[in-house]
Length: 169
Image (cartoon, rainbow, N blue to C red; front, side, top):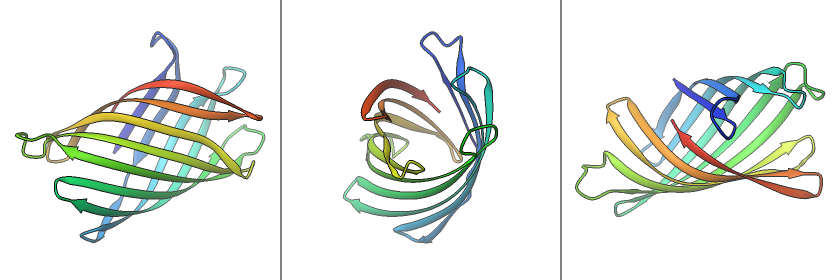
């Protein structure tokens, strides 16, 4: 189970709420697959809440080089947005992540960096890119906390708009 919330500048105005059920299977030591579902509420352009249902499938090959782990997650999402003009959108997301465990923490604390371009249809184009750096702490066997800072680049017409994001999950 995964939950996320995004807020505007002063944390008084939430604009994105997500609850997610994650199902992953280890197919081989270096390959995982997943079938996930997200329920999302987000504010539309006119500031009212939109509901979204998002089934996802993903494939995650991994490579370990010494203590460093490299992941290459490929995800396909069907975005069913109630009340939006194009209520059904597809999105392909391709995240490459490098993770380094912090020495002396038995792998409980790690640093990471990732980049994730988004290809959406419509408009049949790369229309978003995320770039993050952060750290994660395995607080318990099935509980992980992450703190990250990133840049979300969004394509608006022919121009790109950047947003800075502080993420705690």
